[in-house]
Length: 481
Image (cartoon, rainbow, N blue to C red; front, side, top):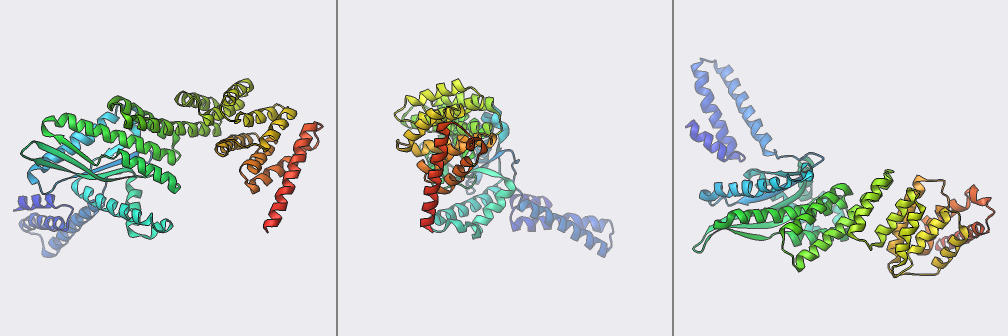
């Protein structure tokens, strides 16, 4: 009897029936022992109650016990449920899931240094069911809110439930679906069906979320069939496809979350995976192009991160790697000009600025003006800013924003370079129409003692123009009142 109850307890462990069968098992084992020991009724009752409470506590703890991910890792929860109605095949299906898919993915990723940052979890049936329910409810509610008020999401129980659980398990990437085995007349086949997926990242604008969602949907394998006679190759292919997907999507998510180094590493492996394991086609070529663009974005941001931390040589190495990927990208070249300036390689900065000169616009003038001012050649610099003042170029706004990022970083690290206040004021006022920022920088420029006392005629022109711009701005602000 006790053996049967133990089996029933094991089978239904995570349900209330499991709690009940466990209690019966405890009593059936405990009572005969207490009787044979001639234990007093009161003491025996206390011992029984303590044991029952202990069992209840264990059962309760396991209801909320999920494998957790370390803070410095990305948790992968691949929740593929086997068909509970096919009891004769359940062990076979579970074995395929754990050994032929999850363990295989873990083995493949372990070949890379990045493996210490990725944790693929294996869940039991109860954990799969509970997590799938929470994820389904969360995703459904999110889709509803996309059409209504997204700012109020935290008041919904479906959202709270997921956030509460994920704060404990630290999951980054979730895929949920099911696995079936069909022994048809034609050929025994495993059918893997993905219901949906979810990737976690820092809050981001809706257009970026939409882009990530579109990429996720493109790589998500909705249905995959594996013939039993070729199951070894089939499950390996399925593992590789899903491993590529998680590398690529988490690579984008970590970029969004400003984890640039990890994003770079993930995307580099994703690119290698794609080129090694997938046949060349229009789709893979397009995907490879997108990976390169995203990887380049990660490298660009990573280089800026190194600059912020005064690691200019590291920033240069990263920039060089980025230029190999996208040699004609104006933003990467523009960053290189700034890096060479930090390293006090003015000639190198000018050389890279000449590359910008060969493009279809006059982007090179922005860096040229900056470098001339830094060298004290105010006459030539003034002529350039006069030219820029009355000109417009295609895509200029985006390029100006990248110039502002560079210039503000330089000013932050070198507050004595007061001339940068004029450059920033000019860019904000003439190109971006950011009135408050422009006013702040123009006033900082004209109040710099170094330039107040300057005898250089062209520096006086810069001061004069700044005062004119300040007057225009204040008149504009007065009208706005």
